[in-house]
Length: 164
Image (cartoon, rainbow, N blue to C red; front, side, top):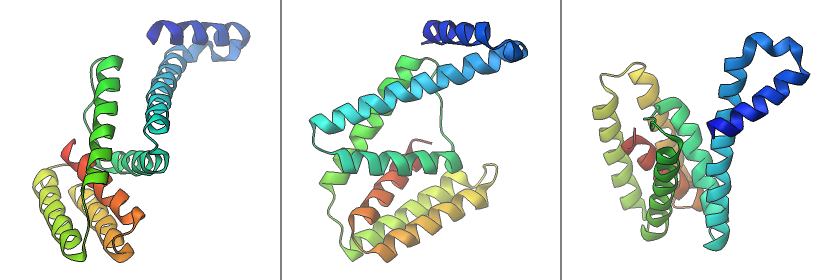
């Protein structure tokens, strides 16, 4: 990915002389964009093959949103990141299709996730913000009462919190 990013960056720099002092930023931006595009495209292809497009996109969007607030680990290489990202998404889809939610199970899962979030984030920077965000979305999932959206929120939150 780095080699492709460099080629694109140097071509852009060749035709845009005003960016010469921004080489590193441009290179990094292109590389991140390419890597995210490869992961997303792979997930879309997997979802088309497995006929889970709506579920995949829903979980992917929620997990991306939650990860901005909760944070997460970074792999050292793109291919490790790729395998971990696709693996986590496949795990999320398995969870999505294997759990059956009732009001009792939804409340139980929400309480358990709240406790896990408090334990994981209690010493972290912006702990109240992270725990508060988890609580808000857990309440939203409970309000939505066992719908596609509530299941997507719960699965996404669980995976995001547990892979933090």
